[in-house]
Length: 127
Image (cartoon, rainbow, N blue to C red; front, side, top):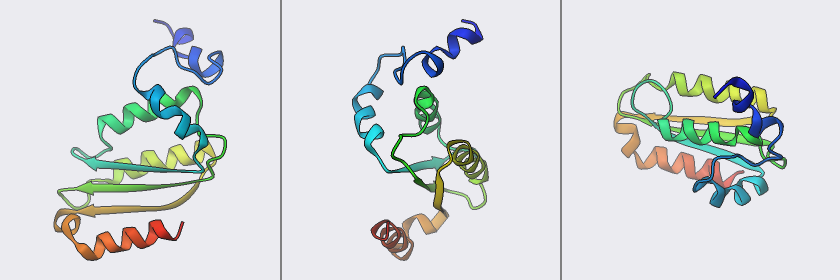
């Protein structure tokens, strides 16, 4: 498959990808969203392969037309390991022209903290 084939969904697919899979089930909700929240564990210094794959799959449409904001939630066993995910997230938002509402990165024992969970809940309610 050459580069021309790789660009088909983005350039000629009219917002649809040639790949037919379960992502098609969530695309209607994605199209209507006004905010995107990315949530991922960090296993090895970056977002999970599953989140990365989902982001790659929406390349055919980019951001939802209504989306103006985004946020990211990161969970890791070790402090200081999520920076790769944050860099990818911020680069993507700059490309999409979406406002960053915040990054919540919890590590180690923080992941079990009721106080930290309450902070995230308060943030979500304020959106």
